[in-house]
Length: 217
Image 1 (tube, rainbow, N blue to C red):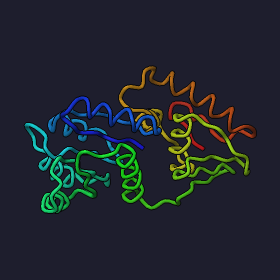
Image 2 (image 1 turned 180 degrees about the vertical axis):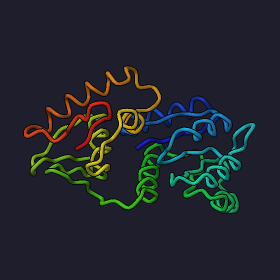
Image 3 (image 1 turned 135 degrees about the vertical axis):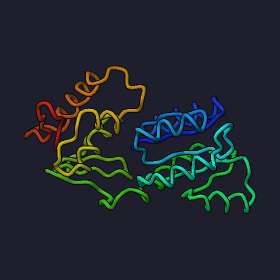
């Protein structure tokens, strides 16, 4: 899952990003509406956490443009205004959920996950292929019934491959979906994570490298 956090208060934006990353969610951050639109123009996100009260390009306008762009990602709107009328206005703009400030980070993370599930294209709650079963809600992975212990990145990589349902996933798409903009070693980091993931999945191998294209499960 990849999330864009749009929040002009630096400390809050960074705190939200850190909390979501600890929960194995790839996060990018934009600190104003214009920067958000630039990112949204070239990156697809599962959820956009959008502060309504942005300077410059207002959060309401960002929400309108995002809805007009389509693409299926969910919008969770944040605001210091918690009156019923304000919530209704936010939802009327096309937001999928609304969370007034102050809020608990745990609740925000739960709402992000729930929104991603609701707005994703139809797919089974548990993903399964070649004896590998991944439960996104429970964050568990098994192979032929045996429980596996994966790191956050390994879990994210496996989830992307399972969602592809046997199709080749390009290297750049794996990086985009499993890492955020700060992945430090590019394809080198991917190769390391893929090597350990394959080792943990065991034999016979289920992840295939497709030269010049990417990977598939």
